[in-house]
Length: 266
Length: 251
Image 1 (cartoon, rainbow over the protein chains, first blue to last red):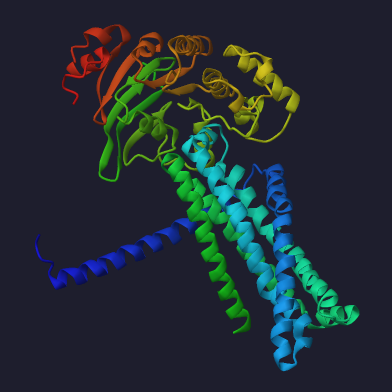
Image 2 (tube, chains in turn orange, yellow; image 1 turned 120 degrees about the horizontal axis):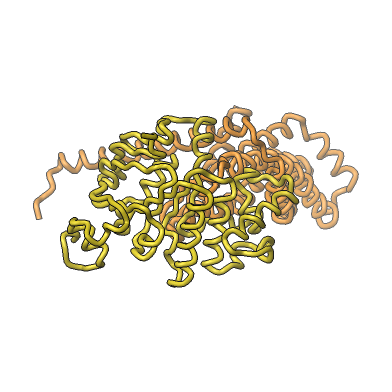
């Protein structure tokens, strides 16, 4: 074995960093082109309203149970935590305010985004990936139908529409969860709790929650479709695409949530 | 002399360092049934996908009815593609849609329109490939492999394309079912007057459906001639392939 020169090791390190950077930039470029292609083609006919409604049903309606469950338990736990922590320095009256702000500004959008990402990004990547490896996507193109318009655009738009609605519902259910535990376990006055909640909630908070939800919805469908569409290599390839879709959606949701929050409050 | 239906000139395509197609020249006459033979992985499917615009070749020219296909975009590409139908190796039926919507997919572009008329069209095309109305509402997964292939064939011919590509039409079928598909292809070429391009390594199939046979080897067409000359081609590569010998110039 030849000894490795120190200078070569340094070069190898830089080369590795360079390769990673090029791969990352290439990935961002490909995703951007994919998104722009989808939006541009979706603007031209033929349109597929029936596909959009089918996706809204699948993505929005069928996500309600998981979103509702997440929200009610999170709201209730948040109220209990705030009460316990607040009781150490006589600040238990902050419970309604913290529940409402925490749910609407942060936990509602992020938790709904992550739950729906787990449910929907993975399913999109698996379905489109299977269609890719079984040549169904190629077949569609030869049958005079554009997969971007028929498959991807309805998913993308349905996701951007459904997520804000789901987040609104999650916020209401989350506040309800906090209300239930505060009133029936922690001894808050029912009317007082609601009026405090109402007072602390500002239109701006709600608007930010909906903006976040729309952005998360965009990433959920975009990553699911992008990874599914690019699938290569049979069943193992479909598995890889599904994993990549979920992981990349999670990262994008957490990152964009941070950026939007910092921009809005920074 | 009339222009050939399809003319490929110097088509090349590499995936990374691997040169799959390396200067393919080929002309297919109107109404002709040409079969491309060659080993698995010799780039036959890539060649078809280049013509369909599913894969972009690195260089060369593809003319259909004298019109250059490469570089077409948007509506122009859609219009040019409408001349083609393709039977995929695996069938590639849409598993979420019933048989009748699969068959009429190109006509509706995937929309649910004119249901009654579309079902009738689906039934006519299914009858042409020897299936009856009982399969109309079944999902592809409920059909046997041979039936799926026939449905895929009905789907490819439903919009009455001028050119049909068959990608390994008999692979995965028993010899009897394979012969049924071969007979259907011959019938379609004769009845509908389509130009057919078939890729296969099934010699029985090539002998039955082809007017002319071409062999793809190492990214080029190394031989082409009438079907009857397949057995005295004078080309050692073709001989080895046709006779299915392990020994010979093809390693």
